[in-house]
Image 1 (cartoon, rainbow, N blue to C red):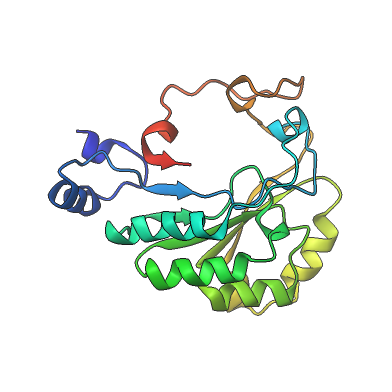
Image 2 (cartoon, one colour; image 1 turned 60 degrees about the vertical axis):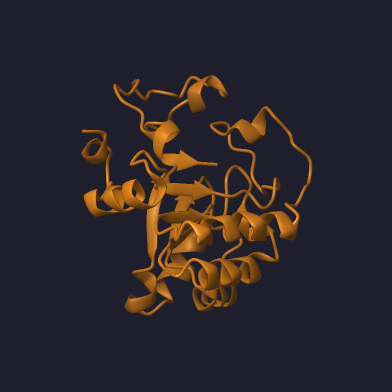
Amino acid sequence: LSIFQAPYRLPFQRLYYLLRCGRADFFDVIEVETTTVCNRKCVYCPNTNFPRGSHLMEEKVFKKIVDDLAELNYSGRFHPHWYGEPLTDKRLPKLVKYSRQKLPKAKIVIYTNGDLISKEVFYKLLESGVDKFNIALHSGQTKKFKSFFESLPKKDSSKIEIIFEAKPKQKIGNRAGLVSFKESNAKSKKNCYFATHYFV
């Protein structure tokens, strides 16, 4: 049953991992944080409470992770981010290009707050191999992003999805207790697949 129970889990992918790795409970998403830097301090993010300085993942470590995934013929989602803002890492296009060359079947998704995105950055990352951009719109940036978004041809803007937009009554979680704020009105989930399908 575990082969079919998770959201967006494809049965043939489970079968592939069962045959290749001897187990079906393999992660569907890997997230690699290349930088600890973020240009925002949102109250609903652990970056507010846990300053981590300014650090970059060594390129050889990043490449080792990608190489190991390539040996598994990894075909899930690949997200070069975690709590750091990925667009602050100037090496990102080069790292994405390496990932695309080594992981041709993976879906590379950039999660960003959109503050640092521009046409130049957007197209450079698309050319490097990004499949999709997931944008979290925080307070004070909607107009700037809207201007950028509306300037794109439809075929290119389709590569962007707004996954979050800060609103007064937005349902926001507390990051499993890492942040605490009055605006958190999200209810506990009955099931959480993050621990079994994501690898950070």
